[in-house]
Image 1 (cartoon, rainbow, N blue to C red):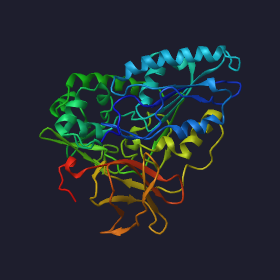
Image 2 (cartoon, helix red, strand yellow):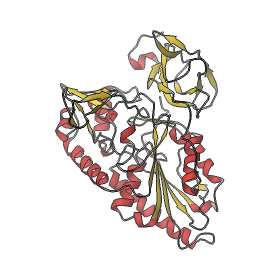
Image 3 (cartoon, helix red, strand yellow):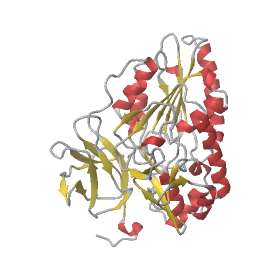
Image 4 (tube, rainbow, N blue to C red):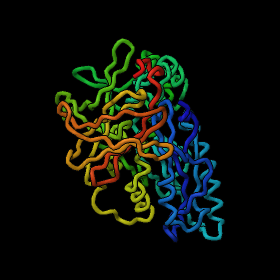
Length: 417
């Protein structure tokens, strides 16, 4: 019940690159996230240890890299201003370093909302001239429909808080409004439109905070994507559109598309489970796709390889991963109550499932995978409260994984098993 954080984790790295060496610096720890955590909006957040360890082998010196932590609850421009101060000071130090150079520039590596912070710094705070690359992993450039669902009902958040309390909690966080969807996501039957501040107010949110966040989104959308590389999670069940009725936003796992003036069609484009695939890269930026969840994308070996390849300009070859497994996982389950893990896109003869304790790494279960009622799934019962990691391995790319919590049945209002 206490294994979550509402504060800052490591969601953006301010990284300098020496143009002569073309290699990353080694990371010096400041406030990096070192253990799995939960947040009211972000769901599970995996440690960045694998990402940091992966770049150390390409380091000219430990002082070349800076970790930057920020508070995701605050507005994007406020966090970007703090990033600007930290990154510019760090660049000055590295240029004066005995192994640095006066031609060194910044490389920004950002997971999730950190990409919005990095982009505001480069495009609005004059950081572009000092930045060589910005690499984003699962960044919601066009927002996430899931944010509107949480703001509306309190459902979809990972914590077993009373829904009214969760709505009050997130309704005062400017950072949540920065994650509202900024594309035509409201399904009205024959057509689709964008979410408006009035809609947000009707869902119980703050219209003024919504208007300010939407203005920020519009500024970011107007800027180009020069020097930006986006790694995008795909093949996971993802909320992509909304149906609004009686002050409630209900999520739908499809997008609303109209081509050449024809009738609207509904198409499941998937995503990383939090960010729909077409919302995770700015217009004009060619993304790189990875079948992985939003939680785990930054810890995979493919993400680390992509990061190092871009920074050292080593081609990766074929697209990442041969498999395209999808994982559907409840945010929270009751201890001792069986639940199903949904699996898509996998070969039932090959895929395996593993459940471990996210804190200790101890194996909890290896449930069998099979077809039940026409769908591929595995059934698991968790033995005690805590945070757990579920992994699906299809023998291709890194296992698809995500985090979930188990709490006493009484905390979810369910009868004890």
